[in-house]
Picture 1 (cartoon, helix red, strand yellow):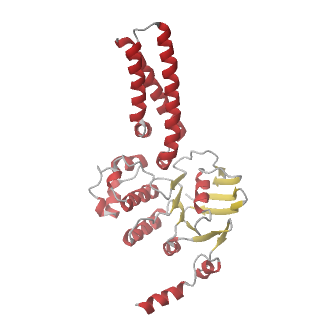
Picture 2 (tube, chains in turn blue, cyan):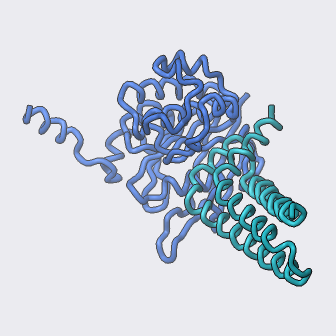
Length: 230
Length: 109
């Protein structure tokens, strides 16, 4: 079943500084919406506002025309992966997968190195391993929309690739909003790409737009210089 | 499954500040135990003093947790358990523990 997440009129100001100004976005089942932006441009604020964590001066966030007003959203409507670790370190993996209603066996198929970690506590994992578990439970649990804030942090390239595959697999049943500074990976999996600059979202059609909006700078030149150095 | 998840969330949430909260409750109980043979006026003073001490420490734990453990609140939100509800349940339980320990301290003598 198709669902549509509408975000419009998001406005956030800190003193005289405009963080978000008339931001409008939409996401629907089967789509990955990528959001890029410089540090401090308001990506996390936007994500938190959509999840209901941040109360803005003006905002509209709704699923299928139904306004989401409450701070505590139903997890079946939306799940949020914050950019920091969020699973309490004392919990065992088994408990985390049970709480999210996610099948551990399938996880062990995707990440065979985690096969024997069912009874282990979260605190015994490295940052990267914790991140894999966090990203996976948020992505694989039942929900209409997923908001992922920097899912590729701490992950090695092989795992980034695997997470990208899982995102593409899970988007069949849900809409996904993603932001990360690994922009190549975000571009790879995004059906629609936006850049947040000056408090507004700008649609990115091609790579040159990122240079135009000063998110990246003369990347080909950097590549050439690297080749020359080698 | 859902009730089980909520109960487990309550327990794991309370465990984040359980140790210092119980120390405070047992300290209040200890004071009551030590002075319970005194005059009723003294008992009254102990009850009022420990009550405000307990309330102050509960307020402290609330703000300290909000400052130190806010990252983990996202876990409970993501599994569909309201953090406000968790606070209400665990603080109520903590206060009841204090009351129970106070009674035990009084009647034990």
